[in-house]
Amino acid sequence: MKRARIAHDGAVVWAEAVENETALRLPNGQRIAATDALFLPPVTPGAAIFALGLNYADHRAELGFKAKEPPLVFLKGQNTLVGHRGATPRPADGNQMHPECELVAIIGTPARHVAVESALSHVAGYTIACDYAIREYLENYYRPNLRVKNRDATTPLGPFVVDAADIGDPQNLKIVTRVNGDVVQQGTTADMVQGVAELIAYLSGFMTLMPGDMILTGTPEGVHFCAAGDRVECEIESIGVLENRLVAAS
Image 1 (cartoon, rainbow, N blue to C red):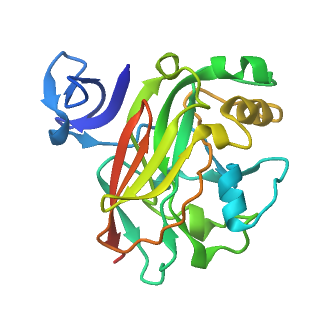
Image 2: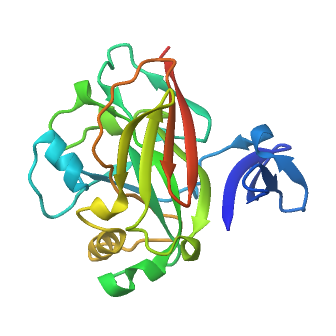
């Protein structure tokens, strides 16, 4: 099942994608066109948001880094999120701002000290993130700072949450990013250094992961600097296409 979190008639509801994702079925059975929906980030209020840096072998090689253990993990605030077809502000001095398409695993049941072999049983579903980076603001590659990864509305999320059972193997999904229709990033989740199961096992080894918590699992190679007015599409096989546009920051 594919579900979207939307605003409708003054309420926030979860709607099921139907008719090849061209329509959404509301909880009361009513159907609306997907193009008429106001998509919200599919996030549980209060959930923790974890993000990975340098978690794809090809992206590490692209930036000139060798494998690094343990995983490079940082936290994101919910202020960073914006929904499907939303707008992301590009700072006037953000000339090296680029999109990073990422598979997002959403925790469904509490996970604490779980083994890699059973870790995926704690995943409720998957969605897509576009975790923009602004390289002018990086202090160094191993410590993503607040100005890079916690700016308002710089992490589009959605459009759908797909049940884990409908995805199967999360390490076998194609990833494509397009800017104004041109492919700028292309890869596969098979290239992750630490897969979804390994990341859950690692994090749950020192903290309890709770339902709704999200893990942004990193991005493949392909650095493309964007400008205000650009239209960005992040697509992950079996999940959908997340659309976003860049606007000049006020």
